[in-house]
Length: 378
Length: 256
Ligand code: SF4
Ligand code: SF4
Ligand code: SF4
Image 1 (tube, rainbow over the protein chains, first blue to last red):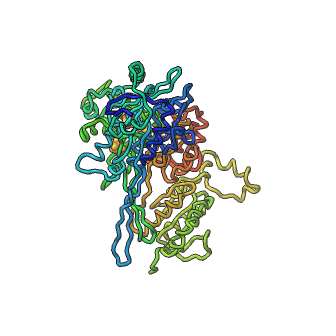
Image 2: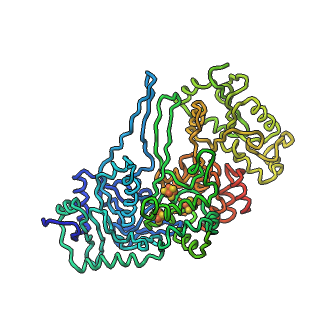
Image 3: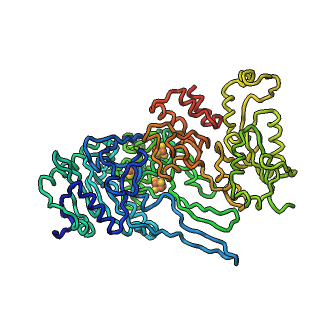
């Protein structure tokens, strides 16, 4: 079979997806991706392409998410569910350490094993690749590395998917993070369903991806199909009604600390923390120690945490962010302003999860223009 | 001086479910018996040791003049008082009567109303005496109770978060019932502790653990209206086991 290189475009049929899956299995990967469990769209282990939500689409709006049947048999005809890939690299709940008191009075410390199977991520969208890149900066770059994240991120295979449709909640186009994938994948698929054929235009993104494709019965891509793929992605971008303008960030937020809009959103926000929990870039966690009754054995756990709780800002003497509005302001200001100073990138990739999974439909793409609309300079 | 701290468990107006959580500790119970002297716990043993007690766990709300007096005696004999459960912490399901006139009910329920001596309202323990610690829940979570007792014995702060149920849901990977199914859910305004039991089974949270800190019930109600709930539905939503907890009480009154 032909030698493939990065950037090459070839064509697979829908039936080849099973072969691709089998090759990844033979190489020792565990496949994870979108699947429907108990009526909900989740990310979990896939037993094969049949586990993908084929023939389903998503309808995501502020405060609302539904799955609906499609008229075609697309494997990737929905956008994002509640869960993001961060759960695989930065697990919600993780045992870190066990401590035992020894009979001689000393203590025995044992780090918990963090070994994980190499994952093949199937169906990663452009905004999610951008989110992984943001978390890479947080956990892998700078003076402190997160060993758990590093270990899990070490070996994996990424099959990205270009979005050919966008949900009403998506605003990646305005941030330049999607809907087409540009980097950070091994293979990228564009799913195209014509009158007679169900095809995938495949872009090779790495040598690892090229090696896998070499074992698959692919055809070279033809121009008409390429054009069709480009048009679909462009259309997905054009169809996005939400947008986030970043031109005046971070100053807009730093200069408007006392803007009345914070009172307005503070009156609506439940401080429930869902926005940060579903955000693919938020990285806060807490450490919890569990000690047995005898005081002989202890465990240290790491759990996701969010800046919306009172406890989050507790320091000696009390909590810093007592008012609900101050906690929402912390969240939004970190995502869209302080993040830039801290990591050189925005903390938002435009996935829309925070507004979809907010129980009261608070939408950052509406809050920011409200602050911008009538700025009150301090 | 006794070597082991003395534990007392008191019952007021309640169903005994929270005391049962203590008995339900099963394998931990024996170990616990080696760490504390169970000095007063009528549900478990008729052996009663005299006070004072190091820790008193109080179940139930105050509904009679006798109980209003008795709780003061409990306080006087106890170094530390912790309420266990929604009744002791917020007045319980029996506080539903606080929204009506209890005298209307007595003749309907009792053949001899003249024997019934009751207070107008079912009130939480903290309305009557200073309380050192409150464990919410209907019933309490036995693991939280164990954590509380362990923390006392080990001289540390108990690890009992006052955040929303949503954190537990998301950490478990539950798909939000409110967003994905349009089911009204009290989770975002409810104190964590149950491990998101009901949403795990596609039910909206009933608020068994009472209001979380800074519970924004008004905003949640507004969204429930949007999901199709009537004022009456919203009153029902907030009027259950923690109906008399201040944020829930105010919210149900606002929709009456
Ligand atoms: S926005 Fe809040 S939860 Fe997210 S990373 Fe920042 S401080 Fe943490
Ligand atoms: S802030 Fe909201 S839209 Fe932006 S990445 Fe996070 S969840 Fe997605
Ligand atoms: S913005 Fe929405 S999801 Fe975030 S804390 Fe407030 S109510 Fe919860």
